Image (cartoon, rainbow, N blue to C red; front, side, top):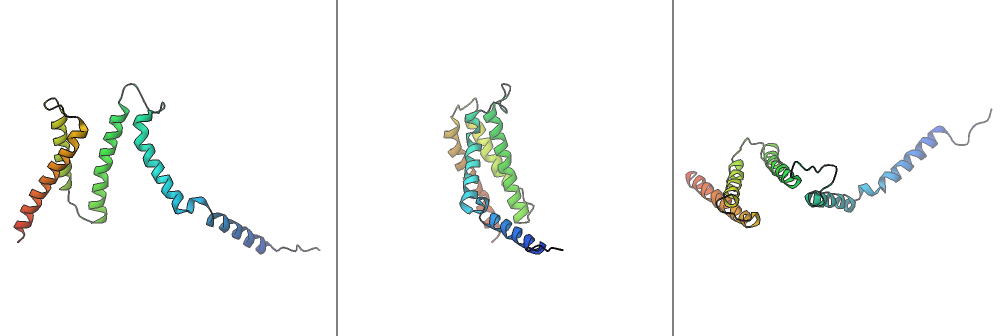
Length: 144
């Protein structure tokens, strides 16, 4: 009866070592590669309305408008996640500031004013900040 010079445990150990070497030197575990993937994904998401990919772009809908709506909902969801998930508070007051900025942008870019969006955006941010300062100062004065 002949015995193998390599036992089954040695083969298992060698394949485990080989697998650990592959996973240790894998490019996906490198920090710079993960950062590159995240930045590339963000740039692709920003470029999608400009690229107008033929599979998901239709003639019936405005792809850029749909992406802006999706980004707006994602912004509200991230805010809600921070307030409820990380802080543990059920406080929806920040949605009022979101609504103030959206209403200001809507008024300035609507039929009455005809401002371009990128001129109305800083004004809407300023109005929302002033609203937050007014409401925050009255709350701080009441707490004294």
